Image (cartoon, rainbow, N blue to C red; front, top):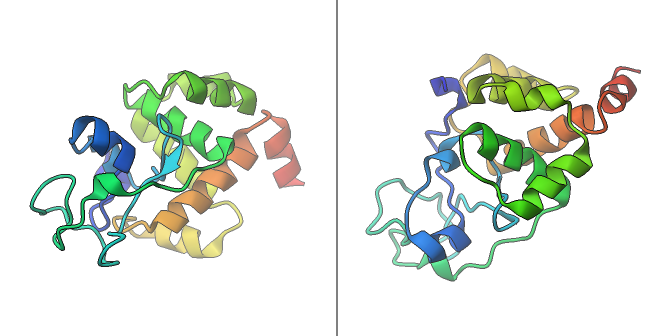
Length: 176
């Protein structure tokens, strides 16, 4: 994966994953990952306690610099489309997204060729497709997206689903 696909500035975590394993999964550092397909929730990129962006250097992987325990946070649930597109990223990264997320992937009816793409190629496709019709994201795409905001990642994912879901009808509708 090229550095263009990494989220250097705004680290993200899944509180439910932290409750289970208290480790920082490298997949969370991908700039377009917005949700945990295993727990079907949004990732956190700021501390609910002090409202600041999470820092990479913290007292513990599950603890903010302000001492807030991130494991205690219940994250917002996400829709099945967002789960599905993030599950495809998990799969490409070599992780199992879980049975329910696999069902969401099947329901979206993505092109079968997605399964054969490398993680870097998949992220490039999602970035390109997800920025379709969004000038502000396209402009940022010319620069390195090293500080991708969580809301931008969500927006890119939702647009990518609208283009790639129900293949090829979604793409044809967007082109019209």
